[in-house]
Length: 256
Picture 1 (cartoon, rainbow, N blue to C red):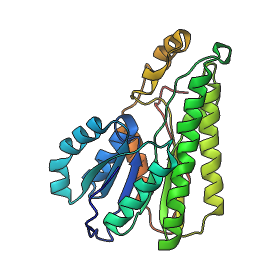
Picture 2: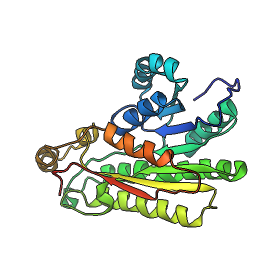
Picture 3: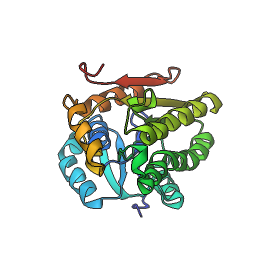
Picture 4: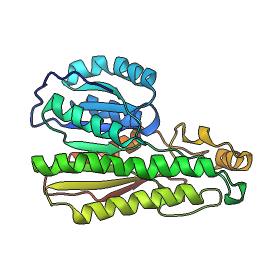
């Protein structure tokens, strides 16, 4: 992973925002929206071809808004990779204002299916990936006297349904870790959790268990556009420095 080391000045009215899992779904929508709003977005994911396509699609928008999208390959399960992701952004822009920890996977299955490797993958991405981001960004935010952590959790952090025990466990862990971070952080550092309900995305494509896949087709019948989540996140970022939006739950009106 590498970024251009030439320092780029960013006006104080605009933010330097790092987004993981930016190659599709919510992460892609968040990155695109923040570029439209004039921010410098470092879009991280493993699928560099998707990131390159996103950079191309947002190029004209960036030219009009004064923002920019900078694609960077990052694997959130690799602590060194995440550390370099944050460090390179700070070196390029002189600061990091926001880390959006969005990368996540959701291969649902019943526990008795014993898909242990898939459980491990959810723990690695959804929990360890979040912790790696905190470990990389917290010293930067502390040194510069401010910053904003945003965790994209899930409605699964608040409820458990059959086939989702491990996934909900990882998302509850993400919620708990993020709220603990909020309580421990200096007040100059803001902390927000976004908990989406059913959103149109590729998350369900990773489900290999036939029963879980069939149930998910019905469950996802009324999915909302990922830009709805991007809008909620944008709202949290736009608040005055003395306002900390701790959590937002966004779901389809038909998801009760």
